[in-house]
Length: 303
Ligand SMILES: CC(=O)N[C@@H](CC(=O)O)C(=O)O
Ligand SMILES: [Zn+2]
Image 1 (cartoon, rainbow, N blue to C red):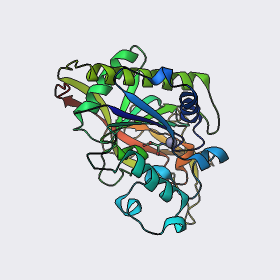
Image 2 (cartoon, rainbow, N blue to C red):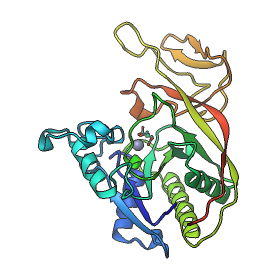
Image 3 (cartoon, rainbow, N blue to C red):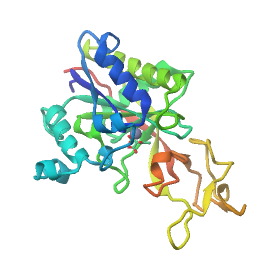
Image 4 (cartoon, rainbow, N blue to C red):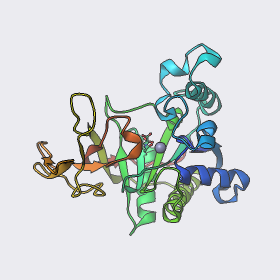
C-alpha cells in the first residue's frame, strides 16, 4: 500500500456548501491540509454546478464514473458531467490503474440527520478500514459512523471511485445551499484526523489488526405513490431525524396526507439512514435501510 497522492474533492454536488467552502479555503491556503509526507490536492469537481449552486447541471456527477462514460467518444456533445468525469479521470486516474491517486476524500452534505458519516465502497480495503478505526477513535466521544455501500445493485459510480482508496464524507443535517458552522467544523475535524492517519502511515507506523463497526446498505425504500407516480405520504414523525436508530417490523414509517400510518413490513431490525434526503426525491428514495456488521481489518504497514 502507498498513500502519497491524496486529493480532497469538494463540489461534486454544487449545493453542498461545507465541501465547496473547505476546498475553496484550502485552495487559497493549503497549510491546514499539508503533512510532511503527503501531498493533498484540493479540487472542485463540478465548478459549473457550484457556480449555479445546484446539485448538477446535466446529470449527477457522483453517478457518472461508469466504464461506458469514461470511455465514451463524442467530446463536446456529451453531457457536461460526463465530460467532466473524463477530465477528472485523466487527472486523478485512470480508474483502476496503478497510476491512479491513492486516496480521494469526497466531501458531501446531507439534509438528513446523519451526523458524521464516512462512506466506504469495499469491505476488503484494509487501508480504509484502518483509517475508519483511527478516525472513530480520534473523534470519540463524538460519534462518526461508517456506511458501507457494497451492494451489487445499489452501488453507484462515484467521483472518488477513481482512487485506489475512495472515502466519502457525509455530514448533516445541512440544507442545500446553506452553510452551518457546526457541520462545517465537523467535516473539517474528520479530514484533519484522516490526514493525520495517512501521515502516521507514511512515517512507517504499523497499525495492528482491528475491527470496525459498519452499516451495510441493504435496500432503498421509496415514498408511497399513487398510480400517476405522485407521492401520497411523508416520512412519519417517529422516523424523521432518526437516522441510524433501529427500525423494527411494525414501526411507523410513513404518514399519508390524510393521517394514516404506514408501518415497516420487513422481517427484522434495520438501521435506516439518508432519511428524507432532499436530493433523493428525484431518485425515488425516501431512505435506505442498513444492517450493522463488524468487519475485521488486518494489520497494515508501509512497504
Ligand atoms: C446526499 C448525497 O449527495 N449523497 C451522496 C452519497 C455518496 O457520496 O455516496 C450521493 O448520493 O452521491
Ligand atoms: Zn452529495
